[in-house]
Image 1 (cartoon, rainbow, N blue to C red):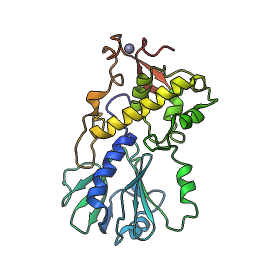
Image 2: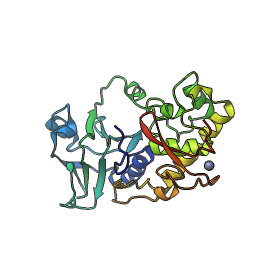
Image 3: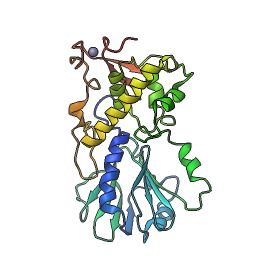
Image 4: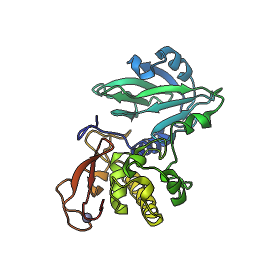
Length: 285
Ligand code: ZN
């Protein structure tokens, strides 16, 4: 079931914001101590197995694949985390705030700084992708699709992804195995930018519409990354900031407000089991 309001769903750009902040602060640091407070965080592995692979290792970088955060270690292993519905990763210059709620794991680094993984609904996970995995590229190819902010994401690539698909274009955009990290908010915003109704059969888009949609996805996501997050309710980045993107949403969560392009009233409907916002004049079915 889709959370209507109040449930933060980390979107790709929010994970990217966290990645950039952590790259500056934890890349090069050694993990000195790991405390897993909730066994579910490492499930199906037991916490001691994961902790043993982390303690004493140096973090080489902070990377991202779709909505997955990756910490490649000097052992060759990669520590992977996924925030899922309500997870957040917070960096602290010293010990974490003892009042921080829902903390599932604490990582202490060699400069005394700490990372906390907090998660109210406990769907978030951390696990090791081992150095001897025979096919890491295959591992990721099966999990995340094309990265919409990478140069390889062209109108032709987008056309190839949607070609022949009869499902609604919004459902195709939300399929993480096709387009990595595009969530409900930016699917709505990109379709509005492109003036395409979310229920249009994906394969029915002509070349001009595909080009507009490609531009809409790139432009809205880039803007979102620059503004640091969407600030949907409880979303927080790794420094506790909330971002300013909510002020820039044009249709999402704006039911009953005037369309910023034509002045008609934004409506809410459901597409692909998700609350969906659109302008009935700009986005004709
Ligand atoms: Zn409009």
